[in-house]
Image 1: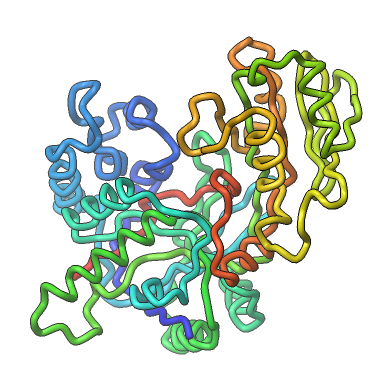
Image 2 (image 1 turned 90 degrees about the vertical axis):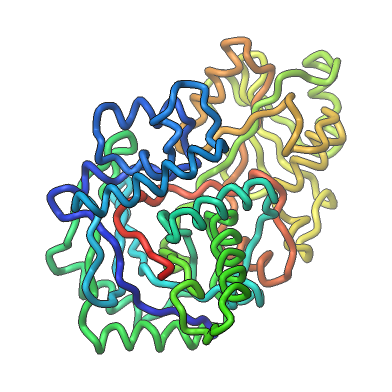
Amino acid sequence: MAIVKPFRGIRPPKELVEQVESRPYDVLDSEEAHAEAGDNEKSLYHIIKPEIDFPAGTSEYDPRVYEKAAENFQKFQDKGWLVQDAEDHYYIYAQTMNGKTQYGLVVCAHTDDYMAGRIKKHELTRRDKEEDRMKHVRVNNANIEPVFFAYPDNQVLNELLMRYSQTEPEYDFIAPIDGFRHQFWVISDKQDMQTITSEFSKMPSMYIADGHHRSAAAALVGAEKQKQNPNHRGDEEYNYFMAVCFQASQLTILDYNRVVKDLNGMSSQEFLAALQVNFEVEDKGTDIYKPRQLHEFSLYLDQHWYSLKAKEGTYDNSDPIGVLDVDISSRLILDEILNIGDLRSSQRIDFVGGLRGLGELKRRVDSGEMRAALALYPVSMQQIMDIADSGKIMPPKATWFEPKLRSGLVIHKLS
C-alpha cells in the first residue's frame, strides 16, 4: 500500500505566485538562473539556486551557498512572500502543453515506502548529487521542490480531479520560457482528503517519473532524522516528502536524442556500412525525418536523414531492458560501432531533449559542433513501469518528461 497524507503547504499569496515560481533547479545553470531572476528579489531561484546571490563563478556547492538558501527561505517567510497554510491540505497541480492537460495530486509520500521499494525507481542515482540535495533539504528543513510521481490510473481519483477542474483555481498562469499553462487548487474538504488517502492506500506501488535524486535525498534525510530523535514515533513530518502524482496515462514522454562528435575514425560510408549489419538503412533525403515506431531510429549525417530499423534478433521482446530503443542504440551503435561505452562520462556524446525538436539536432550537426545525430522513438510510461516492477534500471538519458513541474507553488516543511 502507498502511504500518503495531506500537509500544511507553504505557498506564495495568489498575487505573488508569478513572481515567486520558477523552473526546477536542475534544468538550468547558474548563469541562466541569474538572468531569469534579474532584479526580482521574490524569485525562488534565490532559494534553489542561491549562488546567484554571490559573485559569478561561485560554486553552487560552496557551504556559504547552502547557508544562503536557508537565509533566503526564512526571508521569504518573514516578508510574507511565502505563507504556511493553517491546516493540512492536499493540492491539485495541472499543466497544459499543446492543448493537453495533465492533473497531479500534491501529496506527502512516506520515506519508508521509498526505502522499502514501494516507491519504485527506474534510474541510477549518483551519490554526489544525492548529497547535494540532502544538504539543501537539511539546511532548509524542507522539501522546497516536489518530486514527480506516476500512479496506475484510478477512476475514483480521476473523477475527483475532474470535479475540481471545473472550479476556480487558486493559481492560474502562463509560465515564461516554456509558455505552458499552470493551474493549482487547494483541497480542504475532509471527505475528499479521506478519499485521496484511501485510494492511494489501495495502490501497491508508485513510480518516480522525474526527480530520482530529490527522492533519494528526501528519504535519506528522513532516515537521518529518525536516528537522531530518541523519541521517534513515526508520525513526524520528517517521515514524509512532497510529490506531485499523475495518472500514468496522462503523462507525456518525449524523445531523448543523441548527438556525437565523431565517427570513431570512420568515413561516413564506412559508418553507414557498419550500421547495415544490424539495421535496415534507408536514405530519407534532406527533409527532417522522425522515427515513426519502436525500433526505428533517425540518423542525421552529411545533411541527409536516414531511417534505421533494427533487424529481428537484435533485441529481446521478453527483456524489459533489452527491448528498449535506448538499449538497442547504445549497444549496437554507440558502443559497438562508435566505441562510446559510458554515456554518463564520455565527452564524445551529448543529449538533446525532444522539446527542442529534431531541428536542434540538424543545427548542431550543420554547425560543425557535432558529426552526426540520432533520434529515438519515445519510451512509454508502461515500459518505465515494467522496468521498475522488474527491479531493473533503465540506461542513462532514456526519458524526457515534459512539461516540467514549476517550483515554488507549494513547499513542505519537515517540522
